[in-house]
Amino acid sequence: MKNKSRTPKKKKTPPLRPKTFTEYFGIRVAQEDLEFVDIYAEKDIDLFLDPYGISAMGTEWARTCETEIAQYFQYLIDCIKIGDSKSVRKLLDAFHEVDEVALGYSSGEPRGRGVGPRQAREIQAAFEQSRAGKSGDIRDIADCALMIPGVNRDKISDITANILKNQLIVFTQEQCRLLGIPMRRVPVNKVFDHETFEFKSYFADLPLINNRPKILLPISSVRHVPELSKEKYYRNYVLEFLKAEHEHAGDSLASVLRNGRVVVRIKDLRQKYAIGAEFLYEFSKQHPNVLGQYKKALRQSAAARGGLGKLNAKRKLLTAEERIAILAEIEPGNEGAHDYHKLAYDSLINIFGKRLSRPYREREINEGRKRIDIVFDNAGRTGFFGDLDRLHHVHCPKIFAECKNYGREIGNPEFDQLVGRFSRRRGLFGILLCRSVENFDLMIRRCRDIVTDDKGFVIVLTDTDLGKFLHLRQGKNEQGIDDFLTAKFDELIM
Image (cartoon, rainbow, N blue to C red; front, side, top):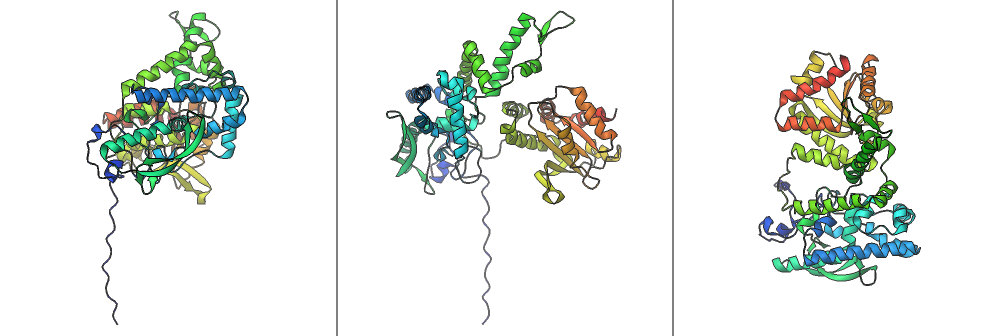
C-alpha cells in the first residue's frame, strides 16, 4: 500500500509587531483617542510607571493617588520609628513587580522580577538603618528614591504600582466599560488597603488575556526613562549648588584662572562629595530648598511632557539627542551596566553603518573560556576600517568592543581585558567604551604602551565621543565619522 503524499504545512509568518491590548479584543479606535497605554497583549513593554506622571494629570483620581502614596509612606516611617519590624517587612512587599501591569524590561511573557528573601532583608535593613528612615524625613517616593540604598528606577515603578494597585484597577474597570471590553471576576493578590494599612487579596473584575488579568495605566503615568534619578539630582542640583558655594568661598577646591575667574571642577567635587544615599540625605536635610527645587522640576517636567500617546507599529529610530539623553540617565556602576551595554551596542551599529557587519553581543571565544562584549566583522573596503589594513597594516578581520559603565577612571585591568581578546587570527584592533576620562594624558599613554609592546591598537570612546559620533551619523556625515576615527587612531601613533 502506497503512502499518501502529505501537503507540507505552511509555516506561520511571525507578526511584524506584537498584538496590542485593543487589537486582542477587536476594538477599533484611534490610539490618540485612548486614555490608557495600549499595552502589548502577550509581552511586557519597556516603560516605567512614574508617580510624577500621575500627579501631572491634575484630576480627582490623581489627587486620590497622591494622598494614598503619602499615607503609605507616613505609615511606613511611623513603623520604622517605633521599631515595628514585622509591619515594615509587610509594607516593603511593595518591592515586588505587579505582573498585571506588564511593564519593565523582561522579554516574552510577562514575569515578575520580584526580590529574593536575601534582597528583601537587605532592603528592609536599608530602610530601618538609614538616618532618613529613622528620622522620619522620608515623605514621598522621591525621598525614598534619593535617600534609601538599593532603590532604583525598577523599584520606584514597582512601589508606585503596588501602592496604587486598587486605584489602577478602578481606572481599568472604567476604561473597559467605556469600550465594552469584557471582564471577568478574578482573584487579585497583594493589594494595599489604605484603611487597614495592610496588603490583602480580593476578587475584582478585570480583562483577561490568555487567562492572565491585565491592569491598564493612564497614558501620562508612564515613561521610557523615569524622571526620578539619584545621579540627576546629584549632578544637576547638589553638585551645582556646592560648586557655587566653593567658588564663592574661594577655598582649596577653587582655582583662579588667568583672567581672574574662580572655578571649581566637577570632578574635584565628585571626589570630595561621593554620591551615596546617606550623603544625599545629609545634604537635603541641610539644604531642603535644593531638594524642593528638584521636586518642583520633576512636577514641571512631567506636566510638560504629557503622555506617550501611542505605541509605534515600527521600531522608532532614535535621534542623536534622544540617545544622548538616555545615556545621561544611565547611572554609572553595576546597576546600570546592562542598560549601558545595550545602548552602546545599538549606538555603534547605528554609527558605523555598513563599515561593520554581523554584530554580536557577548560572543564566546577560546572554547567558551572568555567572552567579548561586542564583536563586528570588518566590512570596510574603504574609509577608516579599510585604511587600517591597507595603509597601517593592522590585521583586523574582527573589530572588538568592551563596555565599562564605570563612575571612575579606567585602568590597566580594563585595557588588558580587551587586549586579551586580540589574536593574529581574530584581529588586533578594539574599542574601549567608558563613561568619562579624567586623566586624558594617562589614558593615551596606556593606549600607546599597547602599541609599543606590539599587542595591538585600542581607542577609547567616552559619552562625549559617542555624542559626537551620533550627531555625525544623524547629519549623514560619513567623511566626518571616518575623520573622527582617524583622529582617535592618530593619537596612538603620532
